[in-house]
Image (tube, rainbow, N blue to C red):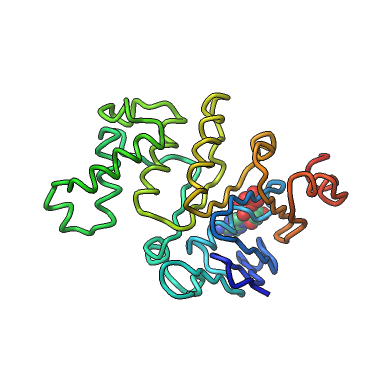
Length: 251
Ligand code: ADP
């Protein structure tokens, strides 16, 4: 069933919490370079699916095959930090940057996490790493704020910094949970532009409640309801579906 080109394919994922099935027999397949939105009403199981993809939650059954830099691996059997190293990066809703350090220092730390303890002890960023950080600063739009303490950034800027920190770890798949929640219109717009840049090189899965935001993209949308796949397609196709209207969009 899984196409040979898929970067990530989930088959028949079920997650139980004390007998309660948060996810039931969910399938999800992602093509390289795809931006996929995961939508659905509260409690549909969207966040739990992201948790499964990054290894935070182990499914009680099913497989998550990741075809990354290495050969295909079933990440549902691996630990979270190992999955991160294999190339699946997860950003949670609340930004976790170091508020007392500058934007630049935050990025340097993110970079050194990749290199291990020796790079940190050496405490010198190579010219190549410096170039990557500068390019990253441009991408996330914080080049002119690199010497500012991260704690002084706006909510949106902190979110971008954290995305920048994740990108320096070169994930092939990036998982974002409600990236525009709490953002101003301008910040939401800039986040849209950032996502378009990111998917030129990577695969991105976004859990999103803001339908106006989802409509800005011509991306595939996966609708979950009660832990199951309800509908998949373009936003237009999904909106036309009566079951979707019933459980979600027409509420
Ligand atoms: P969504 O992200 O779509 O709002 P979630 O994945 O957060 O949905 O939750 C799906 C269901 O699983 C909800 O009913 C939620 O209460 C339940 N759930 C999520 N995490 C846990 C947990 N750690 N323990 C027990 N129930 C959980």
